[in-house]
Image 1 (cartoon, helix red, strand yellow):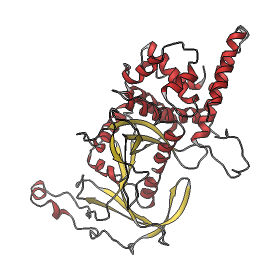
Image 2: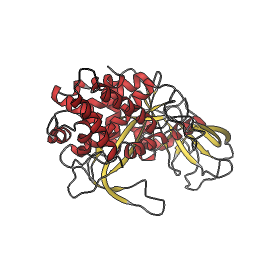
Image 3: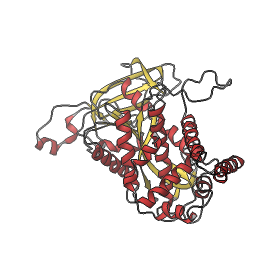
Image 4: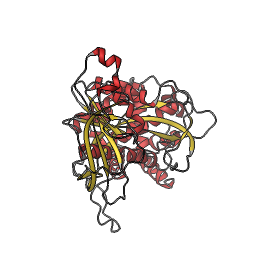
Length: 430
């Protein structure tokens, strides 16, 4: 049994036996299919002889009796156990999976963050997914890898906000991993997580430039706190949206995408009037001394994190944006044409789940990461991309299929099936 087959087998408990066979074929075909990853294109690759009705694959995604939460739990526990010996670092953000059509379950019109700018906001129709990823430091160094370990669909005009979806998913992670501590990083839209009172979780996020911060003081009597809660501290800095670089800052080194650059940082321990006014946290101001990058402000509920460490933690969340791009471009996460009931949400979540499964397999089987084909136009390439990991897994799966149908006991007629299927696949590979 190969390592990838073992990973798929570990998810067998989520399905019944017939559904697990369809799931295995669907995942294998998704990896091998070129071009658009529609369900019919997947069937043409993995089941060219029509062993089962094509409707079975559509029904599996749309109405199958299985839960996506079971797949997320299997992937999260495996990824954390294999890649995170100490504190578990996770990132949270939401992304838009574009969908076009009149009646797509769960779809709505949302702001398209990729095409929007500071002066022009672009809206698009699609699925808004709140995603939690595990930040993994690869053995070969370079920028961290974001492995999706949970995701939920946020519907338009839903009573549950994106922050509440994030709280629910973090609660699931703490239940799945009861002995681990978590470092959570998210942008300013999820800063309210600081007031969620989640166990064993510290948050690093972006802070408003006009946030009101106070110096921490000793706890006052309950009667005094009830009469005048704002009298327990004094403002740490004026609430001004346009702040100049503080004179008490100091040069430091921040880390992002495997590189280190000089910046200007200032830090302090404080409490705020935001979602958790009684909680102590550290804050950091960061910007380049030459003014190329504007000043920015971050906070962390971890009292031990100060200065450039807070800024570096926040900068590392860029890996989740890379995951969104790779899932949509290299795995065709927006391609499956499933419109009804649970189909759209499950198809999008399966694309993210498959992205994480591919990285888990690659990190376990190729820790050196030297599987790509050297090209003269990339002389300085030193680390693999997700497309390199996907190509290595495709080579393995194709070799297994060819070897299985090329055994000595196989008839000549059966041996031509895989050859014909492979030629047909390459013929439509545009």
